[in-house]
Image 1 (cartoon, helix red, strand yellow):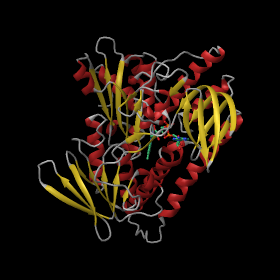
Image 2 (cartoon, rainbow, N blue to C red; image 1 turned 90 degrees about the vertical axis):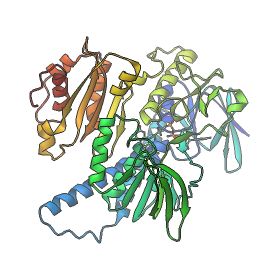
Image 3 (cartoon, protein in one colour; image 1 turned 90 degrees about the horizontal axis):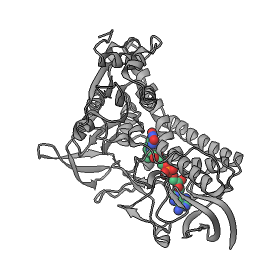
Image 4 (spheres, rainbow, N blue to C red; image 1 turned 180 degrees about the horizontal axis):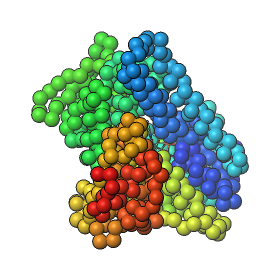
Length: 473
Ligand code: FAD
C-alpha cells in the first residue's frame, strides 16, 4: 500500500476543504487534499454556482420577454432550447472547478482522488478503484459537506422525484413541478422554472416562504412569485407522493385541514441537507457528535486531538462562505500549533455576522438580529425601513418592489441586523454588515455620501429614517 506523510490532510474539496488547504499551504505547511468527486464540492459543481448561472439566464429570459411583449412585439419562443441555458450552467461549474485545480497546483497542494476515511487520529485510508493508500498527517481537517435530505415516503429517484442535484443535472424542463420546501433552494428553483414557463406549485410546512428570513421580506417574495403564476401553499403538510402513469401525485393537507392532490410531471424535494458524517471513520477515533453533526470547539477542533471539522458537517448555517471561513480559522489554528506561524487568531464565527442570500428575484439578504429575534430575546431595539419604490434607481430600472430594513440599538444607533429584499439585495446587504462589523452607527451610515442614482441610497435613507429625517419619503 502506498503511504505518504504530510503536515495537513484535508478530506473533501468543497469551499470549506479547498480554502482550508490553500490557507494551510500559505502558512508553509505541506498539504494534501482527498476528494472522491470533482474539485470544488457541492457549491461549485451542483450548488451555488450552476444555480446562479440558471437564475441569471432565467432572469434575462423572463425580463427580455416581458420587455418585448410590453412593446407590442409578437414573440415566438417555440425554437428556444433550454439545453443552451443548462450547458452554460455546466460550463460555469466546470470552469470554476478547473480554477480550484489550478489554485491547488499553484499552492503546491497534492490532490489525491479517492474516497477517504479516518483510519486513526493521524491517518486517512484512501480508496480508488480497488486500490488503497494511506495518508499520514500531523493534523486532519474533515470537510465532507452535505447531501440532500430525504423525507420518508418521498423516495428520490432523480427521475420523477428529484433532489436539487437531479434538478441541476437535468437538461430538460418539466411542464409542471411541485416543489416541497420553500427555503432558499426551493424558491430559487421555483424562480428558474417558472421563468421558463414550467407550472410551479410550492408546498411549505411553515407559515411563510423563506422561513429563515424576515416575514416582511418573505411577503414581498411571495407576492412577486404569486404574480408570476407560482402557486404557493404555506402551513401545508405534504403527506405522501405517488407515481402516476406519467408523473407524480402529491397528497397535501392544507392550512385549513382540507386535503388536496397536486398532479405534476416532477416533484422536487428541497427540505434541507444532511451532513456527510457516515462512513468516514468518525467512530474509529471517537469524535463527539450532535444529531449527526460534528461538535467543534472555538477553532473547529473536534473532541479528537489533531482532527478538525469545518463546513456543512458542523453545527452552523450550511452556507459556502461559512464553510470557507471555518476552513480558514481551522487552518490558521493548525499553522500556529504546528509551526508557530503568526496568523490572525480568529475563533468561531460570530453568528450575528453571517450574511445569507436568496438569489431569486426579488433577492433577499439578511444578517444579525432580526426584529423577531430581538423581540424574542427581549433586546431593546429600533427598526427602520425604506421602500425601494422611493429609490430613484429602483424606479428607473423597474424594480420598485422591496425594502431596506435595519434593526438598531436605540440608545447608541449601533446596527444590530438587517434584511433587504429587492433588486441587488445580496450585494447591498454587505454595506450594512460592514457598518455593523466596524461598529458604525445609523448616523454614520446616514452621513456618508451615496452616489445617485444607486440602490445603496436606500441604505442611507433607511438610516436617516431611523432618526426621523429621511428625505425621499
Ligand atoms: P461540500 O461543498 O459539500 O463539499 C464536500 C466535498 O467532500 C464534496 O466534493 C464531496 O465529494 C467530498 N467528500 C465527501 N465525502 C468524502 C469522502 N469520504 N472522501 C473524499 N471526498 C469526500 N451556499 C451559499 O452560501 N450560497 C448559495 O447561493 C448556495 N446555493 C446552493 C444551491 C444549491 C442547489 C445547493 C445544493 C447548495 C447551495 N449552497 C449555497 C450551500 C453550499 O453549497 C454548501 O454550504 C457548501 O458547498 C458547503 O461546503 P463544504 O465544503 O462544507 O462541503
